[in-house]
Length: 133
Image (cartoon, rainbow, N blue to C red; front, top):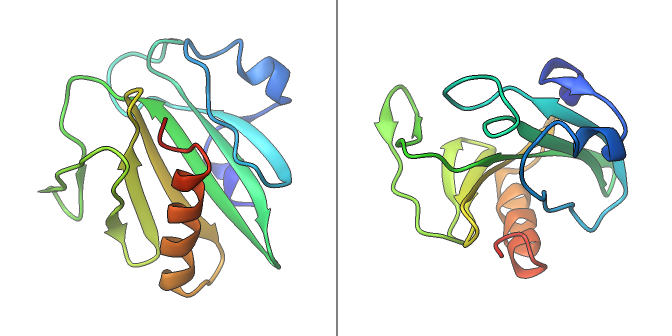
């Protein structure tokens, strides 16, 4: 699974003790949870992220979350993506990112090959179901 390469896999109950914010859990069948390295700064609970690999039809999707810090998120070889809360931006062909109203940075990508339009639709569904609060 893609999540195995992203961080340290552990039960959700343990993972939330390794971060300093309340994560948003996708309303799908979660397959694995991992604590993931920070986007920047020191590897402390205030900066670490959490990832959820979950079932999406016959495919697995990886939702990653970090606390949004005071730096610009850069993707696509240093190209700045301007984030407006709750609006998705592509950071690769089949990967999207957005920020939430509560200052989380989120990314969503498939674990395998999926039509990029399906990733966009899934991101919008997650946002509409609370993934932007």
